[in-house]
Image (cartoon, rainbow, N blue to C red; front, side, top):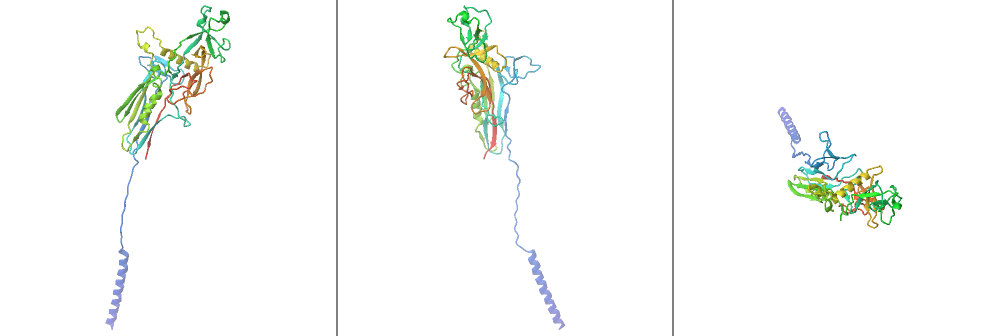
Length: 385
């Protein structure tokens, strides 16, 4: 009996042990699967440098065989041209052989596109290039004659047509004294002598000659030098230079890791007339020299607040009188920010802008001359899809 009881207790313990084992087994045995990943990245390289370096114009130029732009200093005291105002100047016989350099460099790891554009003013309005231009007109310089007057010489001189003989805002033109004028009728008037008359050129005169060299991918794409003084209408201005340089930058695209290497150099010269280069020439005063003189006298008058000692006049083809030239600051081109100084006929109502087409070839009908040289450009390199 006792033995049976022990057997029953043992059986119960065995069942309990088995049940316990099942429970524990269910806790530590299950299906398991796993996976994992990680990554790191850096910013893709851009590293493109766009640069426009150098000054085209200066305040001073060294007096030498090469009147190149240079800062005045203690060891370079001899200066052929020294601007008296806070502005750069250009003049006959000056040049800049170092010029302005344009470049982009780098090999970015993204696709890029290049843009070449005008500079902007503070309001985001473009500045338009401008070049010094003398229109296709005959000009002269009038100065008061202070010598002895006589009937024999009166026909060599001019008198004011309006407002008697007093130069002022009412004077608009001058006429030559003729045989029909008695000496008695003109002897008490102011007589004016005319000099530095230039012949109408047949085309507008743009004396600044620009040269450029273009490079891409380590090779020279081309060079240019356009417009030699009066023979270069539409050919020898800064607009042709801008177009050539823009042509290799604007719209250029590069694939990732490709070298973004494009560059250009722009220089200029305002040459003396050809006869000045010939030491044996007996007459060194050319029509180009006369036109250069007119331009220089114009800007002197336009920049002065005092009463002038001379007057620039332009031949009136209809009356054969000489009309007074006046000066004004106007927009270079319609819709653009920068202003330029122009000369215009005092008898005409001036309506700007200075140029009426973008390449600077055609002057406004009322523009006799443009006295401002201006060039500005910016390079933009941007990532594209």
